[in-house]
Length: 196
Image 1 (tube, rainbow, N blue to C red):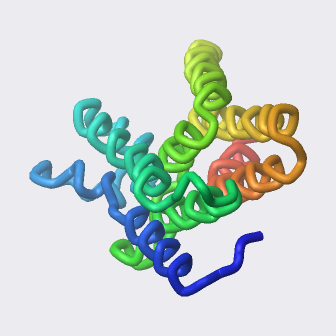
Image 2 (image 1 turned 135 degrees about the vertical axis):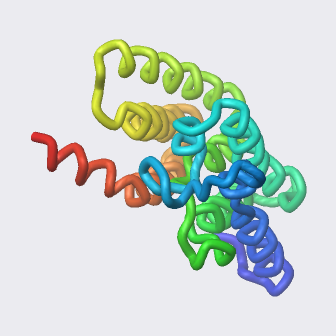
């Protein structure tokens, strides 16, 4: 683990604040809809998609962009990869626990995908393809919580791919991210259990 210097702590704080920008809420400006009171109530891409596809694209671009920008702007190439992962955790946690939303927020999938795309582009593209495929299959087979299942399955695949291509140390970071995202989806699992 890198030394937590004052400079690094400031960069982590900056990453957290970048992640906390609530693009789901911003995407609904002018519509008269508070995304936190419709659908699942989650201020994230999937819930915006239920209301408006064009606004959902804006939300997706913003949430994805937060993850990308956190790494591109705050990570230095000469640093250990563990620093990039810490910045990735910070931006995702900012998204999930935004101070602008009383420390509530989205579930972190799009923002974590942005981080993933910068850190391991080839592996990320495989996982994005698996996500799209699982969403299509899920829709056709009428899976309950298909978005959550596709998202988490793709992140689990990413952790496995990181293990085989980058080793145990980096895979541990990927596993921690997967666990954060799984925790944020606990209400999806509760709904699945309640419908049995």
